[in-house]
Image 1 (cartoon, rainbow over the protein chains, first blue to last red):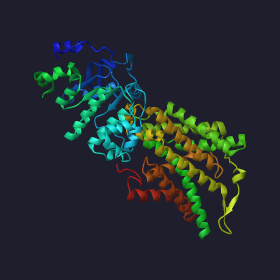
Image 2 (cartoon, rainbow over the protein chains, first blue to last red):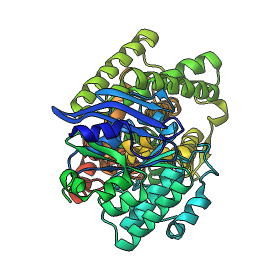
Image 3 (cartoon, each protein chain N blue to C red):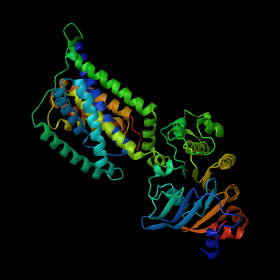
Image 4 (cartoon, rainbow over the protein chains, first blue to last red):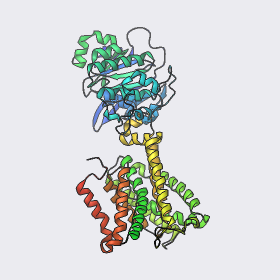
Length: 255
Length: 289
């Protein structure tokens, strides 16, 4: 997009750059669907424990970016590094085992598994972060799931399904959580609960990439923000800077 | 038909149903979980029967033959899944049918190469060669009862595996949503290899325990394959419960058909299938399309 924004992308405004090497670094990511060039050279850095708001109007490539990061959509060009080591072209289960977890758009609850089985199915230890997530901790975070452990996963309300999807991802003890449409279609009260959980995770040191339409909330929650326009990064910088710049929001997000 | 003869036929039908269930459950699992139509499934039943014949000859012990044979078939299943079936998951059914039909030809030729075209029989183990008296005039072979018992155990074991183990949980998750399962760190490819090997082992196991009841001959898998497909369609594609109900229906209908209406016996199971499909087009336990 504009030159000044891209400069900002390379040298983030604010204090010293994050002291830790990036947990995940993507360089020049491209992705195609059929003949359609959906991602046209994305660079992203996510430091340990950092949260990134991934923004953009519909069809700009947010979901494709998330899918490419976890390997569900192989990049047609570019590299992905996790802990500085190449994860480019790895299948999703290998990337997941490096500490990345997905809460997808539509939630992806396993309809033929009970709530408890959904939580257990991919449970894994060892992210090295704080104390590990297990069934008790996930149920403490989402008490409503505790009452529904034996129900089929799809017998839940939308909000409960989203809690289940987050809980299921936490059971893999991820260091990076990708949340696509974190609160879409949920009642306001439930949305509030989900945001509060996301802040809790942040406090625990879990890094997050969050796609959400609630601009005010997502910018308040996240450290940094990136805006996709037609498969390119039009903005990358501090979330607070974007929150303060209504003109930029209007121009790139149409809000 | 008097009551005793009826009982004998019913037992035969149930026992045949159990055997058919082992074959059909593998077929329906592979289709339901991986979406692959495996025409070669009957050929694994045949290979199982030949392995029972060959290994019983070598070891003199059917039990030992079955243990070795099942292990060998599971390995064969892994190899075939890795070399061939694994390439079919995202392809259309025509390609699956072509490749698995090709597998039948290959396996049939291998069978002829190794064991020739003769008919063989496998002796019933001494321990199980007796009969029990059903009534004063009617005996029933112990081995057939034994086969039913073994099939029940295997079926229960399979239900327990799918319902109550973490592996079964993961298989169900991968069947429901392959992408989501892999994004959570499950190696779906390896799960599918396991499921295929399990299906091959089940079909082969059925061929092995059936060998002492009938003959072992070239192409014996073809009839079983068609029966298994009829069962899967009756039960609802992908449903193990349905495969069980379908296998019992077909086993019993086929057995009684041969006794009561021998002229049209080969049509009976198709009539059953047609009747079920008129009543429930998705099969007994299938989800509506």
